Image (cartoon, rainbow, N blue to C red; front, side, top):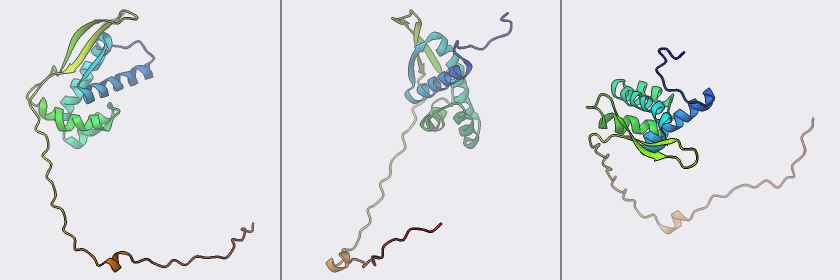
Length: 161
């Protein structure tokens, strides 16, 4: 019976389904758009919403720990903290959109494009150039000095046991 079983299940073995879900979440966070089957997209959607909500509500040192438990790439967790946290700070939920694309050629599975919605513009960090250090030119003789190295010419003896 299916009573009160609300979560979306994938039909692989549990470990494979878990890694598939984690990889889809990571790809969606990195590239902001992913084409996958409808059932996989339904399984991934709440996870992405939950990760971004965690980033918004918790302090960053705790949010990074929670995000890294799910995400398989450090750049994706960094993007959640630095970009999506600001982009979706006014939006409570519904951060992803599923747009149907058609049927897959080989097996007829329903394909969808799962994308993150547009939000506030996030200002890029301004890069401040450091002034170059002015170095004094050294005399020619000082730059070409070499150190003498003592080389041992004695043959190596085998260690005794």
